[in-house]
Length: 436
Image (cartoon, rainbow, N blue to C red; front, side, top):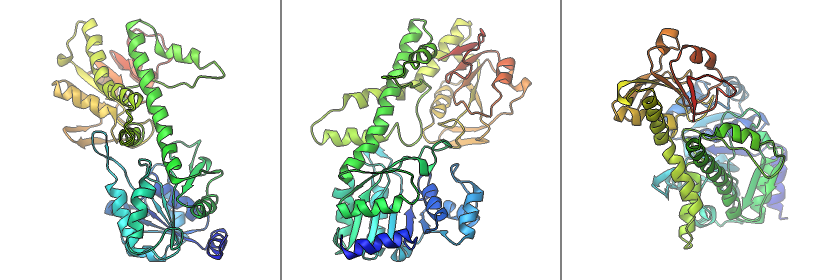
């Protein structure tokens, strides 16, 4: 071990290492706060002025970071935020947590990564440790980031160290906060792996080093592809068993009593958020460069993307059985966020359902205790108040997102008809409740 690596580790152990987190979203902010809570001096950088304003007002905008926690780390002097990349010149470790959306169907967009890395290359000091957390395709760290960082004359393994450590944040999951989620680490060099391990072990209970950045990149994609394929499978089975007049929810409950060889997944109106519906496409896209077609990924995604439309089709058939036409009714959507108990609308299937209904000239309203109004794309609605006389106006109530703090007994009592896509009425025997 050379002297620099030894001294770097000593500074980490003494909490003398200055850390910068680039990108203060649902991954970056919790990470920055966790490092600050453990005694490190942390700077957050984000080009989103609204996020910087929230932090300066000491107001959290991320569900996994309370305003109280944010106030404490700011008051301690260990955390601050800026949009100025020149502050990187004081940093020893730089962690990149920027978005990686899709440019167009099946094509990754790593422009945010490139922009961040270019700004880092202009401002980082010699001896810096650079860690990418943003989900991306295999080879990004070594084939894209490394050349950009070396473009200013510095050499990896000598003047800076580079690693990939995939984010595994599950927004709203109180059982598994940042420190309880094992951290996979793959450096471009062995020294980078050692330094990144030494850094993260301060805030993570278990660190898992792997042989390379490419392996670490695929680890994240495998995790989300596993979920994508299994959700796609159970969605297809839900459609199949409906045709057979079999309750898929009862099937799953019985199947999960097997203590080995089975893991329960549940159907729903679709999948939203940042990970499942997008990340596997990074692997799908990269595989095509090697002449390989990933049929499982494509099929699972097609099934999941079809689910909002399937919900509307089922709704139409349910109403037909009641001798009512879809275009003549009023529909209430309960829950519009992509996940229960999370104030996040990213790619929410509820929005697709609302949009589809509106395009068919159906009168649709929504209720969500976390989202007071919707104003995006073609949707411009306000959440109704959950009252008896309000519920009675709707011909059908669709449970699209199963928030914990909703009075489902009240909805059951005062609704004419309920289409439950989340199985909130498990165990209920009521003719007005129809399940997905």
